[in-house]
Image (tube, rainbow, N blue to C red; front, side, top):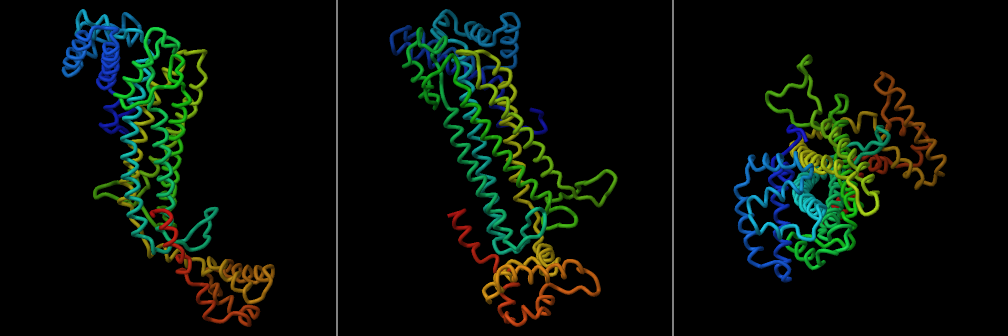
Length: 443
């Protein structure tokens, strides 16, 4: 992933240093398990562990270059690493990789890296959820206008709007937990997964110490439905990011201006127009979400490998695993910061609620007339008539508010008392259930 959208902790997971350390750990643990079973000398396993640990502790760019040099000749990354390790370990290295195949190392390593990455993503999710919860409670009683089809619908709590996004990301966190569990599997089963040259107990030993589970049936690789499900979870999370980012972009529009991204001192919005305050963070998040979702399709296509294995998935995963997790890590962190500093304008929200002359209360007036004994069809006709009269002359000298048009209608005036109409036109009535909603969301 490009450095612009990368954070160091996540990037480190996909570095050659981390990858080779995990490869060595897998090989060393397998040797320990073989020694316990009496299949290789215990002393050899100890030497492999000791000298290997020393080599990994001193691992440098020069070691990466040496492995790359060997791979340039062998055209095989795992063999190149094993050759380098043999140079460090000495004669006992003949016991390394016994009964194993390359996919045992590669797939188990990928499982470790994906679980490491997921643990960081879960931390990111917790920070985002905390930010959303804080802002939701802050604006629990803030009245704003709800919109459907982009058109004013009825008033609502701005805190409820944020609580809805919190609930979605809480579901996404659970999806990520499930994805982590599914991806956290180990395969040390040898060629075509038969354990012909290595016992299942070795796999179980390695898996336990790496915090993984043993794959129930590996072919020669871990089945890629697991990885597909993982990337589907990332794609759903990305969609949640875009939904919230899109909301912020709309609220920041000049004619709406109910909320906006924090504008830093010295920040510039446009090279040509000094007045501009653009929603650059939420637009950036929209683009990053598209990128993350684009990794779902190749992950799904990786499921159908030939027979017990091929490597058509390999080149795909070398790209999408680092890039997908690095991008999502960055996006979640950016979204958290954006929501923590989001500037909210409650006065503008109220102004927008009332900007259509009160027609946004038409639904409650409809119910009031129905309760007064008017048929729903006639009640709808009466209310719509008053609403359209308000709407069509809005802002003109002869224009009247929705309330004024209702009070001038004999069918309303004869049936509805002033106090009842007051209640029907009160924005606060739309916040009456907000406590129950927050209890459902936050407990």
